[in-house]
Length: 418
Image 1 (tube, rainbow, N blue to C red):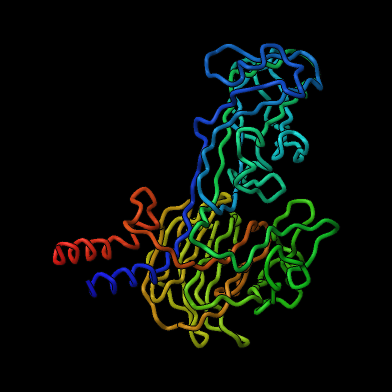
Image 2 (image 1 turned 90 degrees about the vertical axis):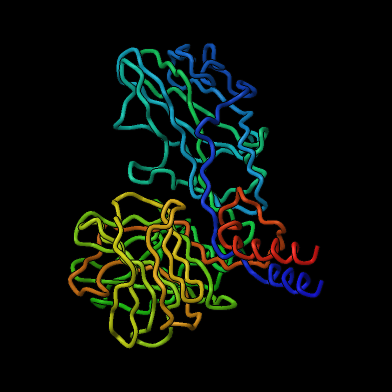
């Protein structure tokens, strides 16, 4: 019995460090329509994929949709993005739709998204609605979302015909939601890089949660990263060729084991982006970094110790799209996840101090790297909370993988006791 008690205590003390990335809604369609806005003809047809259409021949006609059943069961989430995929056509081949979202049953609405430059044609076109062509499913539509805002009553979609002439016909549309499951995490730092008026350099920008930012290294003197009013991104402020600007958060974690979560887009030129963990103090601090190089489509984990850089693990494709990354420093295990999948890992114990998490743009490891079209949004630093789960839930990979060995031990000891 003593061994069982000790083992259960070990289970309780093991935190689940990894946040889980979840994407819901590949088949999420509406159930109801027309409670407040009901201008379209046969509007319910936009809720089914059957080649029967909801139609409108008048610019400005609006229709609301609701009754989505996302079934988000996690207690704490951080939404990365919401994307609408619309399958539609236009009688003249120049169809335009405006779409916005509500989180409170239609009382309030986000800013509208459009498909300018990507018209619906004479035959069915599939168009995704988000903030720009590179953001994919990393557009939060200008706000922070809570679990209950995705209920069948609260979450709503409003579609407006923005075509000057002709008839707009929607076969169906789908809603997709991507979010971090933070049920076993504590948010230490959160920054959506929102600025109401003007672009603001990160060191004087106010975070959502946390004390702020400090630039720990600068290449080129005038280089900065700014939170941009127009986009809610952290992007190049001042800086250009062979410049670099690199920041760490001011808020400390309780220990050295934590994850940095951020949506990142590397540029496709000679420009790199960085995600940092365990950035120490000093003028040239020791640190772990993920270097994202969109030019060569290569990414790599590095460590810098006493000014010397060393590559860790294998390279992986950086891509040139806006993607969610998780950089996890857990003991000697250093891991990078992209879109919820592990893409690189290494074991290293040279940097054990907690330091800070952070981001950077441009020259650092290589003096010739530039600042240009890289950006970040939705930045988090999270650390695990202690969770009791016995037995582990096998449909939650973050629980199961972390505790698989312990569960085997429990079963063995239970057999011994019985």
